Image (cartoon, rainbow, N blue to C red; front, side, top):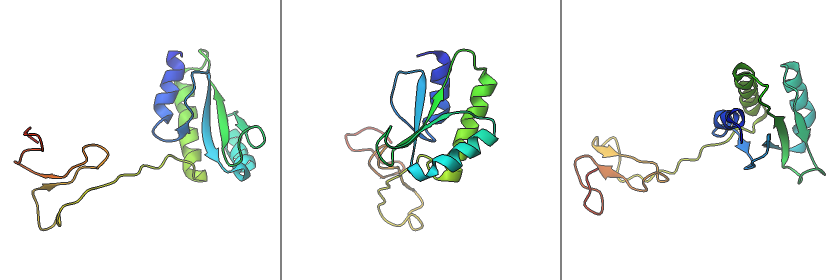
Length: 138
C-alpha cells in the first residue's frame, strides 16, 4: 500500500467505516441503498467523483463509496476529498459511531477523587492515590 493510500485511510478510519483491504480502491460503507442518488449528487456538486456500489453488486444495505487513490493525487486533493467524505457521512448519517462503556462506582459528585475510565480502555474505575489491582500505581 502506498503512502498516499495510507494517509487517506488514516484521515478517514476513525470517522467512517472503511473495509479492510490492501487494494488501491478504498471502500467506505454508507449502508442504505436509498442514499445512492442523493449522496452521489452531493459529492459530485462538491467536485468529488467517486464510484457508488449498491445491491446487487454488494449485499443489500451494505452500499459503499469506492474511492480510487493514485500517486498523482496531491496531499491537498486527498485532504479535501477526505473532508468532503466526512462531511457527507455526517449529513447522510453514516459516520462511525463511537460507543463508550463506562463503569462507575458511586456518585462522582460525591466522590471528587473518583476517576472514571472507559471500560474498553482499562475496564476499571479507581480512586486517585490508590493502587490498581495487581499492586501497580494508578
